[in-house]
Image (cartoon, rainbow, N blue to C red; front, top):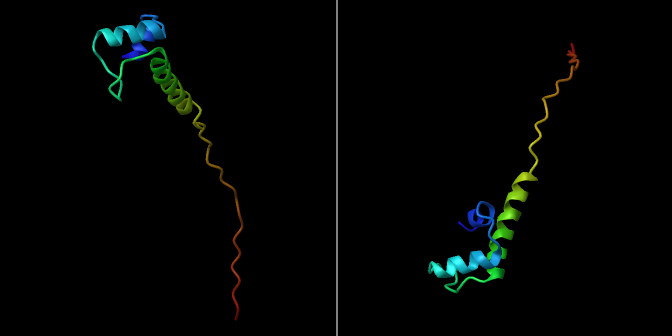
Length: 75
């Protein structure tokens, strides 16, 4: 919800915190929203997204090599 208000509606941290407080939505700790709490939620979201994008996604093809197998028999 916070991300949508920020990205789609173009609202800043202050306006988002004002809307959440006017709607009666509390933080996880049961407090009112502030600019800093909205910023930290968006920052965590950005960090999770960038961490996902930075994961190695390159797939390398299988490499086959030829080898020679000699059988030695002892009489």
